[in-house]
Amino acid sequence: DADVTQTPRNRITKTGKRIMLECSQTKGHDRMYWYRQDPGLGLRLIYYSFDVKDINKGEISDGYSVSRQAQAKFSLSLESAIPNQTALYFCATSPGPFDPQHFGDGTRLSIL
Amino acid sequence: RKEVEQDPGPFNVPEGATVAFNCTYSNSASQSFFWYRQDCRKEPKLLMSVYSSGNEDGRFTAQLNRASQYISLLIRDSKLSDSATYLCVVNPTGNMLTFGGGTRLMVKP
Image (cartoon, rainbow over all chains, first blue to last red; front, side):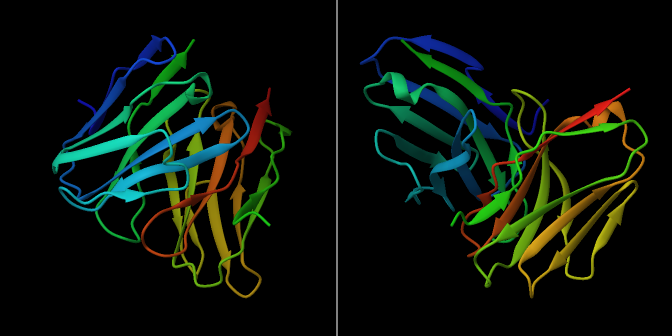
């Protein structure tokens, strides 16, 4: 089983819909992150959390919200999806501040 | 200036060749450095951490030059399976990673 699991793997939806992407991990890491990746733009940080109930904005948090209700789970929500949120989304975890991050398989999201 | 800059490539090399990538970073206080590999439409995977003394893992060698603020990755005896995008990653504050845009490598038979 994957250490960092994202669901769903693929999602196609319409503009204005509310969408939730889930991330769960079995690595026991305190730190969790959400990124999006667009062609040619690299990875950009959306939100991150260092502990349960701890939430921090990243580089591009507008239009997104997150929830960290348990150490192992970090969910990302798009309250009212828009087409320019079409991207590949990754969840990642790390054990400490200067450690590498471990990524989930990604969620491919398309908003029509 | 971008925080982490890489030549996007692509680098097209024959099998068996040696290829080197460089990456520059802007924050001189950066504490940790990594190279990740990303295959098309897949998640980034840690290739190796980069230490001040330089480090090697099989065919891969990473170097860090703090004075000039650049990181390098050397791949010897390239394999077809090395074809991927290589991401230079810097941790400037301990809170989050900063990713370069990636360098694409294509190894040809």
